[in-house]
Length: 144
Image (tube, rainbow, N blue to C red; front, side, top):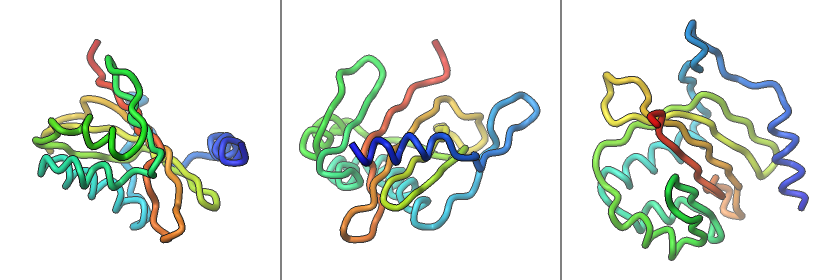
């Protein structure tokens, strides 16, 4: 329960994101330790490396994808990401951290010169090794 309270408090703090003229958040630069999570995710996805992707999650982490039931735990995440592969570019709109919990809110696209085609939220936990891991990954596309 304390993690949930800390995360709720994080969500009420002032945000770091800026908004463009259309109301869509601008991409921001993350601190290196959080940016590593996104770059490692991109690399694992592009390589089709489900094991590496699952390793970015806490042991009890979740993936929450549209049109699929929730998946929990690294072993099941690795199975679910078995068909990963292809281009993926992740950008951040906002983030916050407090002690050992945090979040990143952002967008994804498949080509550098294109607008974001979807959005995601990552909730994060810093584990005993001092690194940030994904506790949950929820995403959906911008098209209906």
